Image (tube, rainbow, N blue to C red; front, side, top):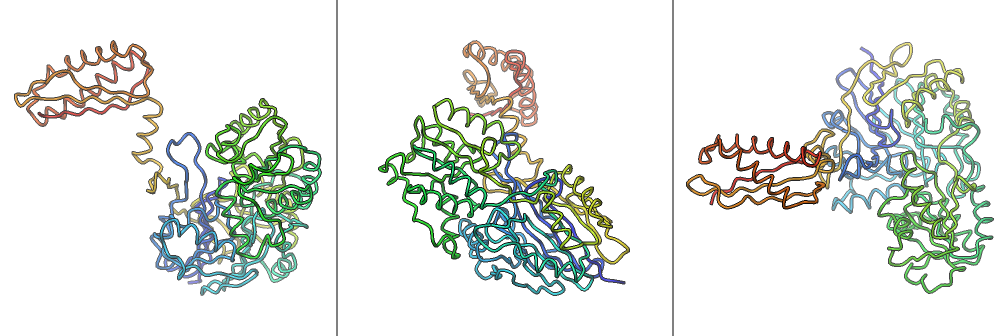
Amino acid sequence: MKDEFLFCPLGGSGEIGMNMNLFAYGQPGDHKWIMVDIGVTFADDTIPGIDLIYPDPGFIQERKENLLGIILTHAHEDHIGAVAHLWPKLGCKIYATPFTAVLIKEKFKEKHIDITKDLQIVELNGKVKLDPFEIEYITLTHSILEPNGLKIQTPAGVVLHTGDWKVDPNPLIGDKINSKRLKEIGDEGVLAMICDSTNVFSAGRSGSELDVRKNMLNIMSRLKKRIVITSFASNVARMESVFYCAEKTGRQISLVGRSMHRIYKAARQCGYLQNTIDPIDPREAKNISREKIVYLCTGSQGEPMGAMMRISNYTHPDVFIEKNDAVIFSSKIIPGNEKKLYKLHNQLVKDGIEVISEESEFIHVSGHPNREDLKDMYNWVKPKCVIPVHGEHRHMIEHVNFAKEMQVPYPVQVENGDIVKLAPGHYPEVYDKAPSGRLYLDGNISVEENSQSIKDRKNLSANGYLEVTILITSKGNIHNNPIITFRGLPVYETDEFIYGLEEEIEKTTKTFKLGNKSQEHNLIDALKIALRKFTKEKTGKKPFTNINLVKI
């Protein structure tokens, strides 16, 4: 029986974010595995109390004794954000280039885990041997430092896993895309390419960081008052551009927001940002005149606790803006964030502050490949098969069509959990399904999608809360009036509402013998039904209801 070479995405296929991919090689039932990336996505307002969501690793957790390592392509949260949460369940080696490794250490430090022994730092364009896999890191360009594609070689053939990338002729920080090596790999023969689909609908090229810098300098040169720039903290090339433009326009620069400081520190530690002016503390910046300062801050997506939102609400302790100042949003609007960002823009404009965004000026380029960039990659690598990932279904289906246009013989459409047999066989195909799903970080506990804690909170947020405590004497009688509290119900005549609830309680309890344990359980259920029904009639809400029977 021939050894199999398999690919299985557990996250990031059919969605943007939460990337987790598996490769396997070996005899059926006895495969060795590697994991590529272990990312998160961010929850929206529909899941109250949840910030982070990550793929359910249950399938590979059951095979962890055969998991050789986690290979990280780059340091964006949708590729590394779950590592400190899920690694304790997997316990394998982690491989990353220097910049990514610094940020990984920070994540584990926050969790009080010493990862030193299990974190292996790989040099740029370096190699890792995890028999039967040979993995080569290939430098690409993206909107973060040290993005890597992976050449994954097994006895059955080679896969190129692109990770996130674009073709940037002038990335400003870090090396250009290693097209020479990609061409060599293509000439040697590539069984399959696992490829980024984010911008497959966008014609032309995604553009260069150098062009953004030139335009940002023009804009900042004409602005006469205080400038606040907000961007993704992870985009170190953009950060360097802001430092560069600040120096050229005779301004000091101040970094605002925890992520901005963390990324700056990590970049400096790895030898980047060496020839820039030093940033000053936001508390000192208050003493500098408006026309001599630029702030670079977090919160470009209108995050409620992000620095930008606090600045616009005038609640930030160190940064104050006023009429005729300017705010530059040097980032794209991530789909789903439009409403809160436009609200933020409107608030700023209403206060007499100039707002500059990608809608009005060229101050952002994507980190993902447009169609012309994709053509370059296809022409270099010449894969027999393309498996689109890193996209919603609409992106991935369009990418399959694009691959057909590019004369790729065997494009394969996948979704999370699909197991693709890359070899042996006449062509790669989906031949099995692995269990896949999502885990939610609820406080500091991982819970499943249908967990009771989330259901209860959704119910609470939609319907409010009602609690009744009934004191029962030793003879089985109700002592005084019940204690009633409620939250989140649209009640104005409180006394009247409570009086109505007390009547319902009295009516319901009359039919039960309160000294009997099983009767008490039945009473609790009957009270819940009666009180929710009464509240629904009075308010239109059926609150989450809790009944306490207390013997005195």
